[in-house]
Length: 119
Ligand SMILES: [Zn+2]
Image (cartoon, rainbow, N blue to C red; front, top):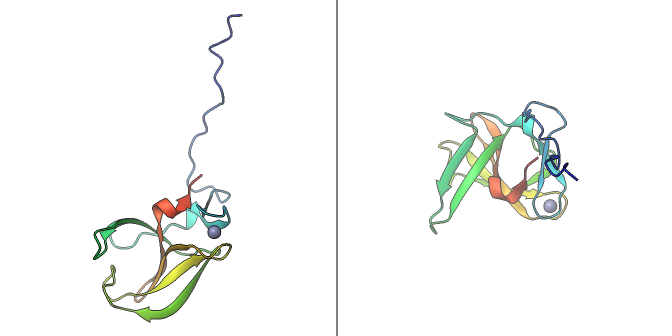
């Protein structure tokens, strides 16, 4: 047989704006947000921060994240976005922390890139 070169699968062209493309909770696989709902905050929709313990977080900003819920009192302490208070953001399915919700001049979700499963 000489057909060993047959590709395993066709590669799909990425289309970030397709409404069906979603990011999911890395823990329980629940749908968290649509890729198309990423929002630019300041220079980018992607921000890298280091917390006081030296842990590096890559946050992706979303205008909405129906699969996440915000909880806790808003706090400006050590906020990564000046003037924007944060609350914890957790998965509605399993409760794992997915990031934070920020509110100030803008209101958005900052979700931890590695806590999500990307399409
Ligand atoms: Zn989950």
